[in-house]
Length: 252
Length: 386
Image 1 (cartoon, rainbow over the protein chains, first blue to last red):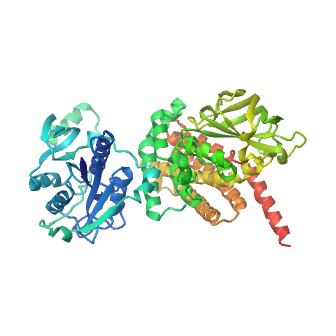
Image 2 (image 1 turned 135 degrees about the vertical axis):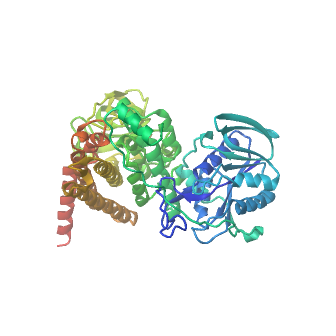
Image 3 (image 1 turned 180 degrees about the vertical axis):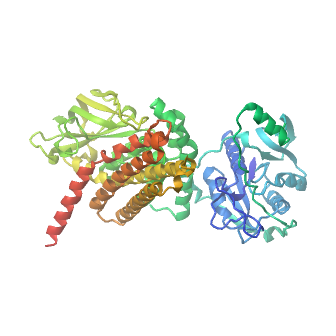
């Protein structure tokens, strides 16, 4: 079985995000970028499937700017076999919307014929949580979202999903799209020898036009704002006073 | 070989993340248990950190000095105990074999040193032989095609874990200087090789040293490093330049960590109605530390670059080792001072680092030995140019 793992280049999770002065978006100039952490979990799961003998090949794919090839190199260093970069924007500030990404991925799936697509449940930059679901709709494939456990057995996969208030286990028919959640696994660190080997693994470069997909945005960003600054606290003298204050502000 | 910038960045980022996410949170536990958890040892092994300086043909990655110091800056950010674990395989334990080993010795040991399966120790220091390394007393008496080793080696880093020892012993009993000293590759488990109990150190808990004792320990003549008597000491000296730059880079990493801790503490701690960080006397200490750490970083990078270009950097490596190790001592002292009473408490990392970094001014050549190397080299070069 071939596993396709879409990965996104996002602002590093350790970076404190700054909104651009005109509110049009987030400032990404000279900001450290990394692989979306949920996608790292997807790559790790694909490698584990391969190590368990349930997958033969892992293909990582990224849709975005040219610099996303660094993200793909990381996936290759972790253990993916080859990579496909679909260049769909020149400016690092251009975010390709989920529908366009899903349409491109659908074409990649058509060409590659994987038995499974493993992707992060969402990207930590826009939190859209849509690409996997849209891809499933476009392909007419089964989907298992928010996976915290996954086992693949022949023509079906068993997925434990993290839903509000508990866990739900479902059985889906293959081929399938599985979007992964935080607790599925702990991704490995790429080793130095593997980082060097990754340089020699194939990385194909395509464009959105090659797949005939229009990536023009459908959404208009009206405003981007930083979270409100936390208001100063007060010291209370006793538990009674604390209870009274909480009642005053309507918290209890 | 030399890596392209993207690959080196990717590796440095990976090590930086591993250090901050995995190793830093374990520092207290390692100090408390006086041991690095075995699963972490395995992770360090899998990352390829044991074979950074071992050539690719032997399973390592063969980083240049410039590349190795970039990684060492990152490793220096956490407890030196972790660095110590991989230090001997990348430095004094393997470099002698790489430079002067026979093809058989290279093929036999380097691949296992590169993947960390085998840990190497460097057994030069003795109870009565420290910086005056040429006066080694451990003897190696020839008996047919074997040698019989007798003597004691002291403070041997990683000896409790080591599978291979580079042992310096006197093969020519009529000499009292370096010319009669030979290096042997002795495997752990060889009859007559014994280990003393672990030493109790001031700091760097989790990194272990002990005595290595030889009592009629018989080794074949093929165990002589490079196959020739008398070249051992020269090998040892050649190995040291690389080690000194590596240690210097670790000192820079440790200084940057101490500055990071001091800065964060100074921002959070309020005194006289405002954060400590706003006080100019505190800022002066931070600025001095930052400047000195930056100077040492530049010395390390420049000397590494010159070494890679083929220049003899013995003098500059000694300058760098002396400055970087003394620098981190001053930075640690200021870090404790900025923390005030808290800096004297074991719950703050600076207290542990203060003790850990004290060793840097002592091992791989004390500051005084570096001064002698630098001074002697200056005079020799001046006389040569007259």
